[in-house]
Image (cartoon, rainbow, N blue to C red; front, side, top):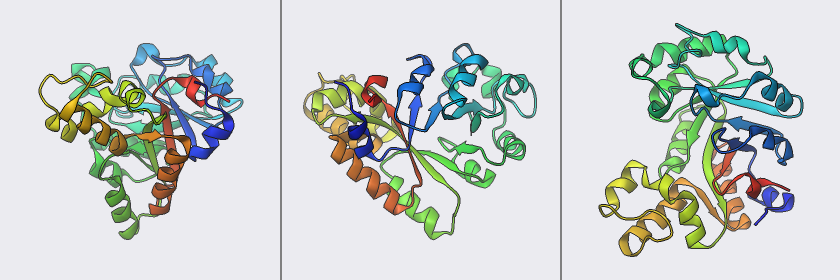
Length: 260
């Protein structure tokens, strides 16, 4: 099912997040979003500079750059910085271990985030797994939607945090439980509290039954944006009322869901 621009607009999403292992990121040119965020999924999947040139000619582009990875290490090999168009914005992250070598995983995160922020004060800072370090580094905070997001955002704003809070969430514009589980069941099953609550060896897609299905469906609403476009839009409005500035949606069923 294709999602119309009118339907996408109902969700209130501000940015589309694309994964270069899953799609040609030039598909962003077809999406009704002014900004696109491109995830880092290993150096071999880093978009070529000419592709990024195409995108920045029409869109605001944010590129995830892991500060522990060779090529993006501000305290070591930073050669990849020179290959990126200057118009490409950065999202500094520690880097997912799955996309790092053993040597890269062993590098200290805090001084590298600090050095990266000195280089680019406008960059977003990804908080997954390094929330306190990211907050200390300052700048726009890029968070994952979770079951504690509401409380965390309230606390940040109550404490006087005035910078941008951007929030990332896999998005499924569907009300059917099977479609939701097939799209995000695997993702939510990897969240710590969900993993601990699931029965051992339980399926995590639409074939899940009983207790596993109940846990996964509840988690899908904690860690993702799911439901009809109106339902997604209502949740997005709740989050923005709490203090979230930018909602970033990853089309969990494929880019076509975000097409006009």
